[in-house]
Length: 140
Image (cartoon, rainbow, N blue to C red):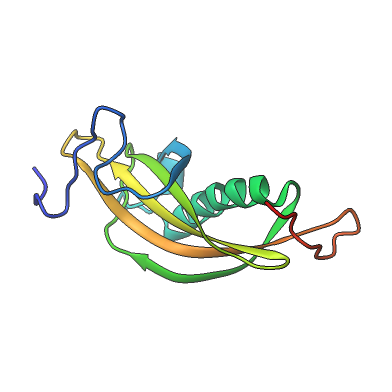
């Protein structure tokens, strides 16, 4: 069993206790995503988080967005082959043409030892118009 301070059980909603934001992505880590030791590549996890954050940013922008920055990434624990990875997102800042999304990634361990927050970071997206240039975000 994992250290209780690192592991969180899912509540009745299936959401890890302590997770902040809206569930935007859930997937499994596969052998093709891992190094020979069975640890998932950080780049794969970063990509999943970017997809999740872009989904929330796209909803807020009412259209196309592009990733322009990733900041304050903190890889806390490894992800292993077979883990179920869930990304929870919160709007952290809304500007004139861009939106910053705070993304938390949680892993439900494949061996049923619990659910842990594995990483978190802030992703900034810019809203794009049909000409692929930045455009103002709609007022909400």
